[in-house]
Amino acid sequence: MSATIEAGDLVLIYLDEKRQFLVQTTLHLKISTDHGDLDLSTIIGKPFGFIGKTHLGKEFYCLKPSTADVMFKVKRMTTVIYPKDLGYLLLETAVGPGSQVIEVGTGSGVLTLALAKFVVPNGIVYSYERRREFIDNAKKNIERAGYTDRVQFHCSDVTHDGFVQKDVDAVFIDVAEPWEVIPKAVAALKGGHHVVSWSPNVEQVKRTVTVLKEHNFIRIRVSEILERELLVRQQGIRPRERGITFTAYLIRAQKVLENPHKE
Image 1: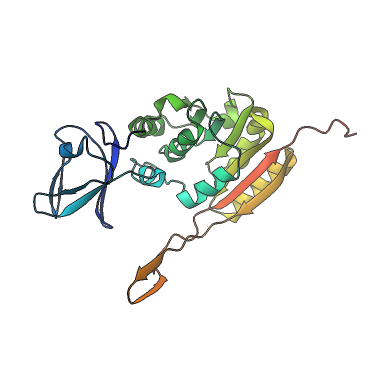
Image 2: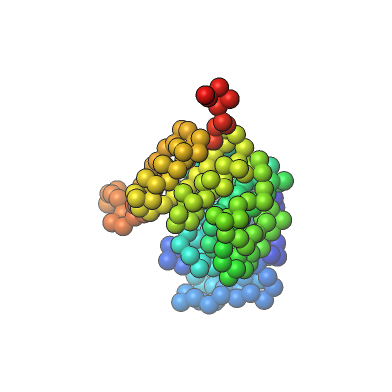
């Protein structure tokens, strides 16, 4: 991966905490801000970390965007999973380079993007969504991030149609009724592998866990993750007044096969 900014690269242009822009570099690209105009065609060929100036003399910084930066700056048509939750769920599965993963509920393609990045160079994300307009928007977000060849989209209601794929490495569920997807996930998921889901209400969690138990899933675990940023200043350090606290209840479980000794 090049350390030099090339045409078509995603770059995070950072002026300060309130002025950050995720851009895809092209010739003749300009951004206007209250601190002056930025001619971003001039950063092509420069290294990441380059410091430029607006026409009013304000410095800006050309940074390599994180996965979270890309996730939060896509065009969103739905709510999205937060990095604090997604990172935990990914580490709680066996997903990695070469994995084949099913996602239920494409939404804006934020989870799709993160999964696609994890499964490169030769893995695949199969993303299922009922609404065509969501898929069309997600495709544009995935294309912009450069992972088109790692994702296959399916416009389908899996609660009725099930999955085309078999023996996948994980199933990620982001819909309002995850318990309706679990019976279909059983048929698509490898033995011993993970299904993960998240829901905003405990009533959803209870029903999901009940159905997981009914379909030979074990090591069922429900968690929530809280994130609190600290303000580090010369006069003292303290938590920021506002933060990302509760977002969803996170569920993960592993599939076991039918017991051949069961009477």
